[in-house]
Amino acid sequence: MAIETQKLALYLVTDPDLCAKFGLIETVKAAVAGGVSIVQLRDKNASTAQMIQYAKALQPILTTHKVPLIINDDVEAAIACGADGIHVGQDDLDVVQVRHKVGRDKIVGLSVETTEAALIVDAGIVDYIGISPIFATQTKSDHKPPVGFDGLVDIVASSPVPSVAIGGLNANHCKKVFAAGAAGIAVVSAICGKNDPFKATVAIRQQIDLVKEKE
Image 1 (cartoon, rainbow, N blue to C red):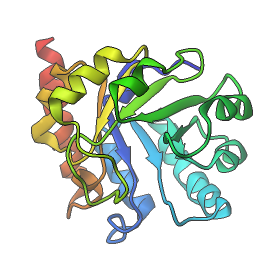
Image 2 (image 1 turned 180 degrees about the vertical axis):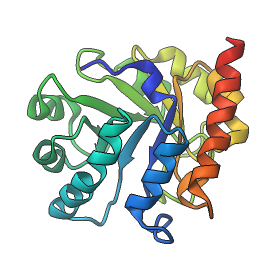
Image 3 (image 1 turned 60 degrees about the vertical axis):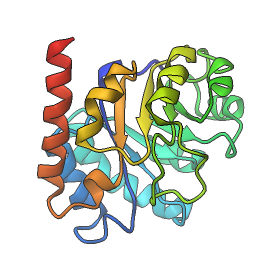
Image 4 (image 1 turned 90 degrees about the vertical axis):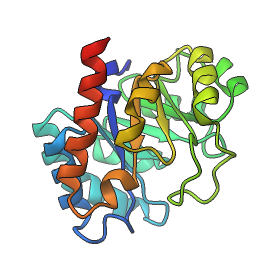
């Protein structure tokens, strides 16, 4: 299932600790209202049953706004809840097996940290890649060394599929992310960690729209 590229523009990745102030559901609801175009449910400590429960609570909100729901790592949860897709890392599940399990109809995303990894991405299996980390980030402790915007440019150019940039990014980085050729900017703390997730999302969305208007 090829993803609509515009859906990658503002990609929210959830973090249970950062979302704790308002709760996961209310944080995502505010973010979607503010202009998030795709949501990845990520919670490394949640069980499959918990992931399914979260997903089912989020789906009515996301469906209303035609925002795809991507499940992080948990293939069983993605299938069971009928999510739109699954995202896996290089050290998680084999992406060929993931595609086999979820079928052709779901979106499959893959984390990529190097140009070498991007060059061997199979566009027949993977729909988009997440390039990380651009900067060091506290929301993921086991990340590889930051690639920066120069690295982003190289990895984007090496990928046969659309890409999103992630890792310490916020509204101020939109221009550079899209100038590098990425299809979207993925954020965690720039929305989940804010006192007003709606306003934080709107601020990022406005910067994206300004960039898009000039293209």
